[in-house]
Length: 112
Length: 112
Image 1 (spheres, rainbow over the protein chains, first blue to last red):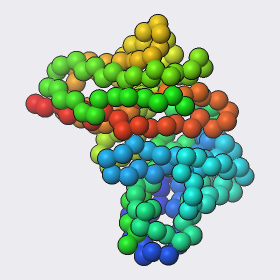
Image 2 (tube, chains in turn blue, green):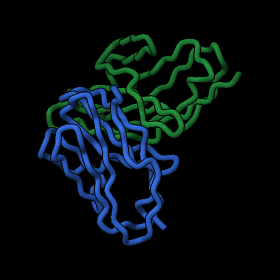
Image 3 (tube, one colour):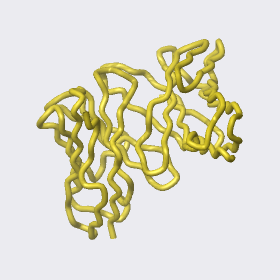
């Protein structure tokens, strides 16, 4: 049981490039989330999903898109990366309306 | 979501009890109080959650006074491995997505 996994672990992009971050969970959780964490700061919610085929905006959604085509996967896309998107990205999942979210190990993204 | 205020940092020594207090003056009737722990280069991990009075699990205790405007996370007999950032979160947990709002957290340093 791997829990929540994220791919890739590290990535460096040039301004204007695009990329997709993959989050996968094997706990059959309904809810999935994408957060970003800037140095010395708390996490901020980007987008979330309450089930397969559904997505919703969080606190800081601009510049990001998401898709939840399969229950176990939640993809975060950056269409045109900007230096302001340099951050550590965490994915999380939860069982229904549970308050306990399970987090992945994070993806460290640098945009130059 | 209610705003929370916590000390930025705390120092302790191995074997001591550590109490981290969180203020949430604008907590709503339906809000729960949740604490997460984050080690460097890892995603946050759920510690404990409560609504009122006292909650205890194998990791920590959570004390919530009658007015619920504050809460205290108590870590008994800390060890070096308890060095981490501790986040206090307040919010409603429902089928709308359970968005967690992380503040800056309290950076706990446990010394030998």
